Length: 392
View (cartoon, rainbow, N blue to C red):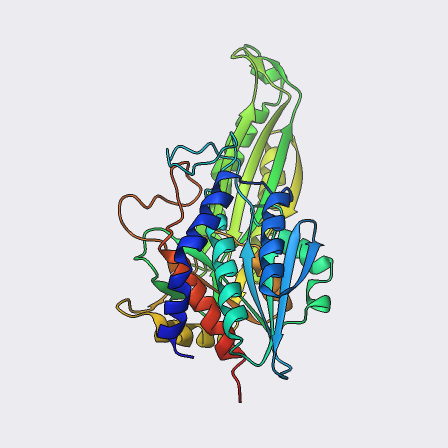
């Protein structure tokens, strides 16, 4: 089946896909709360003839469809959760729940995979098994890891897995990818610096944790500049600094929350070692103590070479007027599809959400997924399934 035929079939369902996306957008659900969303997904997959498994990793859903006698299998993943943000778009289909919003486009990702499900169920132009993975809790909580721990790849073996993210600022449907690391690992150290507090007028009788913490903030900036290979991407950001209750009181503690991003396991290890050494050493030099809760978050999202070349080839078939972007470097944003890529070969790629002024950035209260991307992205997924499971 040709790419134009796939596009025509999906275009015929564009209105229905848009309606699904708008409905999901109005009723956003946060991590592991995606009960309504997962019910809609399961109902649609069942209607299309997929074997449906619910409750994987909490609220995850897997739809399985086999055709022919091929033994190969492919996994296609979409995330379902929303963010704790108050929407300000003013759209007719804006969120109906205060403080919750699909500000990252997961409503669109879910709908795209349902569009691919419809196309694959109608055509069955493949020889093997397709597993459609609807994942909960991508935002900061690790739903991918939870699904894997719940037996995702044991119960639904996949020879390769693929996922995408819409990307504002790139032309609609623009395909961007790179082999190797495409997104960074993220870790979150939380630091408490303690010392005997005292009167602000008698600083010599105390050890000031605010001064110590301020010195820590400055010292941390030397890690990327002086310890990390300049050719390796890395970020150390102190995002919060909290201490004190009054101007004339030296408090007993100061708290720092840090975001640490890296793109390779050796650099990730180096950052962890240097941050802890600097925090403890600087605190002690100021007569204070430091306690560090170093939370290891998502690993780097690392694409395998063959699967990246395959996804890129499918995109080249479909791209039309937009040349493929081969990303020269990773983005320092993180993504928990990384866990799936640690378990199976695969590829994570970006598709442009549009580059007009109305296309706001991810995680902002005025963001909205571009409905015109639904057919394009569903076509990419559909053709990837057909190509990976090509009939002999």
